Length: 231
Image 1 (cartoon, helix red, strand yellow):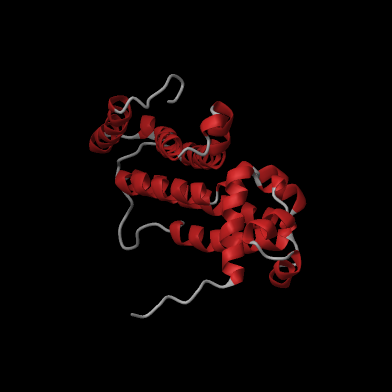
Image 2: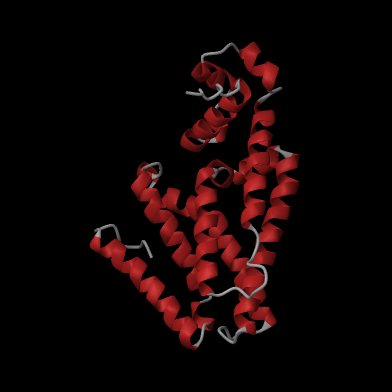
């Protein structure tokens, strides 16, 4: 049988660093800690990366490539409410995989000019996609809203999605890294973002929105995971 080639040291450093940054917060992890966890010398680490910012920037390149793939809308047809729901789930899953960028966002941007510039572009792109999704729903007469309403909705959707994990961390820091707890938190985030456009939906689309919402809420209630203040 063919054996898989061993992962390169550089890839292993990035994978480990992402895990440590996610679990403990980027400000609390040094290159010394990363080298010790890798069981390599600091010199070996610096052979691959000049400093911690170099590691952060390399992880951000991966994140940026993945988010660019998500920040697209269906081609050849207008988006519907199920597209919006799927888009939000994919977005929140990606945010969770790279959660340290969002949890430590203000601190990172104050120290890293590259992240400051690129994250600003990502936010603008998110708002553009959210705006297009809402405009598609309006074109199908599934949503009734003015351009001003849609502009506010798109911005609010991005604001809530961007800072949702920070809210969840403040709400329950002791369970922040528990898989089931955060899976529920991400689902709640999707619901909260989608609920921003709920009042503007009409007819069958509004009914489908209610059905999706009720299915989600029922699942949490049956599993006993819907807590006070969660929604």
